[in-house]
Picture 1 (cartoon, helix red, strand yellow):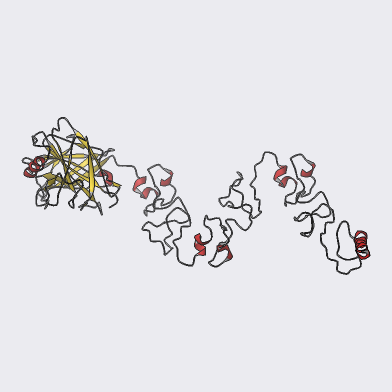
Picture 2 (cartoon, rainbow, N blue to C red; picture 1 turned 45 degrees about the horizontal axis):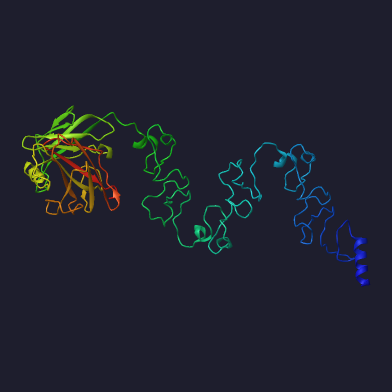
Length: 452
């Protein structure tokens, strides 16, 4: 008991300030348990035996330590030349000493701001401002590194451990700008639509360039990755006021050979412009006004029912073959309507097919698509599908391998237009908004499957 009393007496007599030593003053190398010279409860160096486990940045001044307060504005601590709270900021440098000024907070002092701090303007914000090892400048990987199994998104790219390409040994498709389109230089990207600028999320094959006058038409970028920049892109060019249309007039008959029809009159539906097909069926209409709707062309020739075709200008097509129907086949198709018989001089026949295009270059060669359904408005009209023998078959509920269908309008004087819609394999078919109908006329249509 006397020895312990003696030891405590030595401590109390020989300690410096409230510094506590393991041995008496005569020891050559005393071991400090807590060196707290100014007695404020914060040591220098840090010791787990000090009351507070934070480093005192000035252990000669008890008013300066990590638990002290600096601020608010106007307080003496804001102009005393001291870093009172040991946060590395003195007087006006400390946010607590600035009034009404929003500052970018960096709690973990790693050089990247807290996103919750509104004044942080850097595009690289800290995704964990409580951990200095986590920030956009940190490294995650390579495979096998501790950063690949620590449960953290070390580099703040939204990917943790094995999700981060840097932590995977296998080749992966890199998408640096996170826009959903891969970098062509990444060999593992199999998508046919690769990013032409994987450093800019606003540039990718799914982006929009245009219309004319839009900022994307003067930014020097190929925004939609079609190889055309600004004014080079058709989307950035003003639409022409007029356009020249051309093609051939061909005959639909039972042979499907599509022979040319000479001497047919080709005119706009309103009769404002017309021309006549040549010996090889060719025709041209120049200076056709461009409108919001695809133009409807009427084709007439003695011995043939009047034909109406839609010219698909909206698809970028300027050369297209128009189709007329053999009178005999016209009468047969109308006569096969189960709701008949109908007066062929009053009835209008809409003959169509569901098609897909590999290319819209002339001459267009559509693929006839099976397994599609077609709906008609008004609903009082019936879709009659055509079977593999090219004959109407009311028993079918969707297009056969021929992809064809017909609709009979019994009295085109009463119903002057119809609209069509449909689907194939869950994909909506594309069609003009309406089809004009005329008594004794044939209307040719193709519903397009855009997914083909």
